[in-house]
Length: 229
Image 1 (cartoon, rainbow, N blue to C red):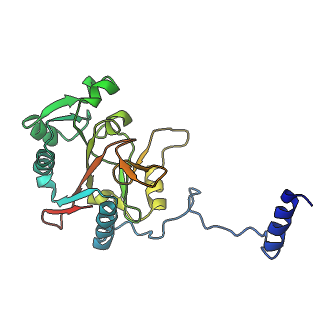
Image 2 (image 1 turned 30 degrees about the horizontal axis):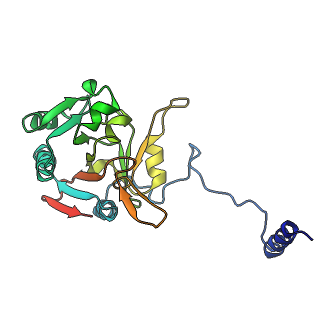
Image 3 (image 1 turned 180 degrees about the vertical axis):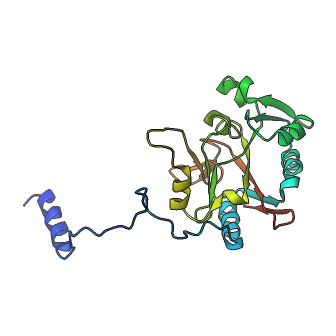
């Protein structure tokens, strides 16, 4: 018996009592696996879980009411000592105006190359959805988020997400992100700053995207609060 045959024989022996019967998986009418929390109402626990898990990825989470978003974004960028920022075409006009009065602002339309973006300190965007159980933020690159390149090249990403955009789990997020049949669009899933590890398991940040992620969570039930990961 060859080594290959011996290994396969051991696998067959170890799995002899494993049934091959397919187990049905409950799915929604759209065909997706349903959320474990079907009630769409946003709970305080869901927001707390989202903020906690985002911070676990070494991101900074700032929770403020809507009227403080613009000032908070400016404050966070100033605290980081940054001087230039690129903004998507559809970013909230009030946020853009606040940035324009404090930094060198590059409109998305003028960010024509990766080389241009490489000279910019930060990007400020909106977002599509946040996932509490994983601490993930998803961008669908709508006008308030800009094209993907904007969120990959600058070293700092300030991402604003509303409390009504936070869902409990991945299936719920996927159902919200689902497009009409046949439609295609890019999605960027962000779980903390860009990070990788070398062969010695040394964590290196900023290799594949922003080194610093600042999440501004619009939470009408909270006073200004900062959690650093």
